Image (tube, rainbow, N blue to C red; front, side, top):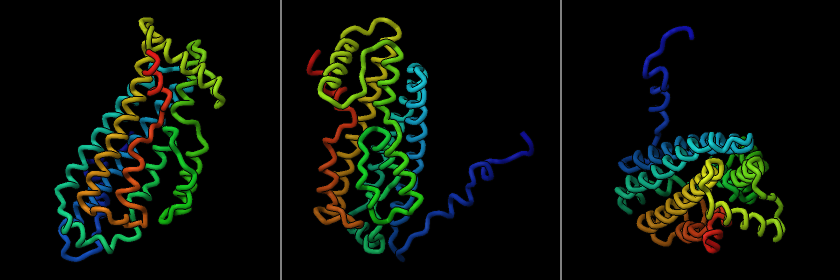
Length: 259
């Protein structure tokens, strides 16, 4: 490694602190709004990195190596929820002072969050047509939608470990997976099975934490804008509420009915 660096140079602090550029004049809370959403995008980047690492380890038949990145991803997702408390310090009238200049920008357009959904198995190709997305972002999301999901990577790891876990979509394959999961949840004393069981629970942690974030996000939005439509033309709070019951890994929830 050649040369020396320092804190500001290594982290590119000057460039980072130059990225907050409010559009309105005299709206104090706009700086808060920008900083919080930029930090969200940085956390999204880290979550994607960790979930990708977990999926790669699973596909390589190394479920033990997927544990740490899954735990870290869930830990970061807990921060997403906590960050909403910071946004809630903004009053509705404070938000209205700079809301109009934001249109049609919207958190609905976050490509990285759509990538997290896609990697988790909840991707929707319709979001490729969302306004406010660049060609590069569309290409990134399109590639992500075509990649393996976390659950398909888990299925690969299951098969590496000798578990009957088919990847098909027909009812018979789904039933075999549920039978295998039921067996795994009832009997996971053996070390290899214990790792797979813990991973399944980490997947549920990921699923649950995103659901709790969606719920808190919907409440926060209702507190700020009531029933108004979103700045990007979405249904606003109604849209957010419609996503609360979305689950990435329904089979990991359904197996609990069989225990």
